[in-house]
Image (cartoon, rainbow, N blue to C red; front, side, top):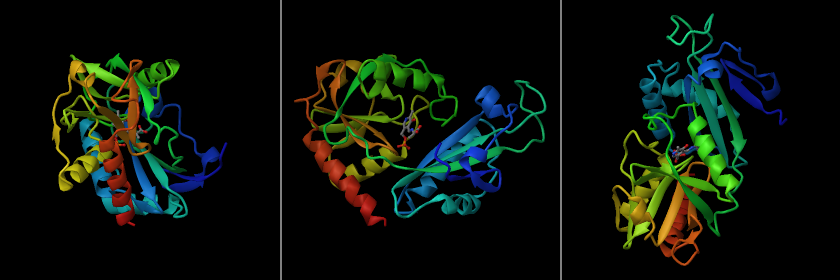
Length: 280
Ligand code: PDD
């Protein structure tokens, strides 16, 4: 196991020494939330937006934020190596209770863990990937970045078992997002992504893409995408902090457009990469 330095409850320690109690509510109940924050050449990308989403997730599970934004920054900076493009994984659980009880325990401290990993450029970026559609079997609060990811991982694994990189999740006849990504489609030359709701995680990458599209006069809107409509899309993308903007070139074994990353993807991906560089 890679023995990098990680942060756990106030200490910087080697990864293989980082241990939490079996009574931690994260371990017993999945009672916690997390964030994934990219850092390019040591610069945290949209740090305030990620921290705002962390605050929203903590509010969503009624857990007090153990740190101010300044403290979070102080905690995370020492984990970064500016020689690499990396991402921070941070997790806050409700902490270690004295016994297993579903009800919130009183007067315990949250468990705070953070580690940094290098971003490995995603192999499918330039050629595109295959996706499968699946019925969304997750819970009702997908806007909370909860560590309870069993639904997501089962969907992602089903995609992989079918030779696909991602599952597009369909709820009440509408494509909402991917198992670990947001979704965009180009339909009748307009870039569309579902509006924010408790059916999707409000992706930071998603917001940046919408902003870039609007500033560059690329026709776009936030709107529902029916399962029937996505089958007519000329382009489909899935987006996330660690994989960025991935073109989907095949959905349910049918080609999307001409089966190659589309022209709008080329433009927006180029603008996205330029935007990342402009922040360094
Ligand atoms: N996941 N939707 C879901 C369900 C996700 O898990 C993610 C990201 C996104 C995209 O959000 P963002 O652009 O802020 O990364 C959307 C992260 C990367 C993960 O779980 O590792």
